[in-house]
Length: 64
Image (cartoon, rainbow, N blue to C red; front, top):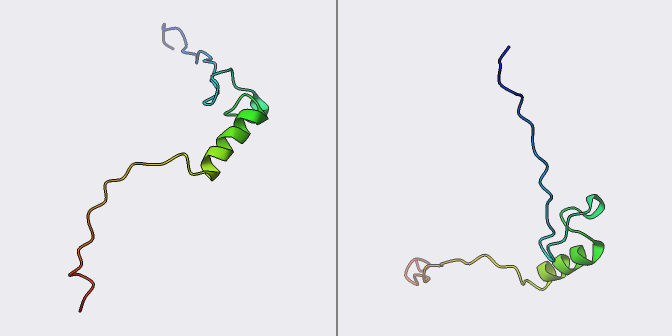
């Protein structure tokens, strides 16, 4: 075998994306039901958006 020490994963505490508190396993990736509900509300209100650069429509392509 090798003389090198075995590697181990050092636990890094995940943080809630809403408030920054440590994550609770029951509500992962959030710290509480409250933060999970806040996130769901943001999705339902379409607060989260992906920016897109759309090309202008070319009117000549649809006509036959």
